Picture (tube, rainbow, N blue to C red):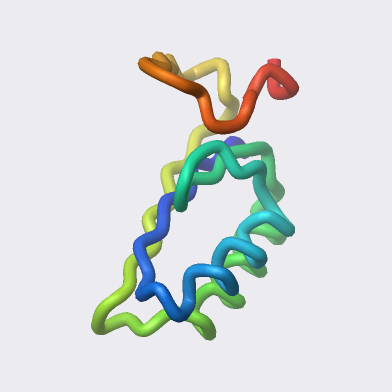
Amino acid sequence: MYVILVYDVEQKRTAKMLKLCRRYLHWIQNSVFEGEITEAKLQELIHRARRLIDPETDSLIIFTSRHERWLDKQIIGKEKSSTDNFL
């Protein structure tokens, strides 16, 4: 499945969340990741993220699709990290 993950965590947890997400997905912009991932790996990522975040102040949003081709993406301005390797 194709996933876009966005997080908003307190500054003291940012580095840990960044490191965790980079283990599973490709970093494309501050606090934004995307990529192909299996359901099992996604559940593992969610489990580990829940142990990091404070549900009272932090958030994690995950958009899923069967495949990247079902999404239209438009980039305006500077692309932080190339996503050409997904095509």
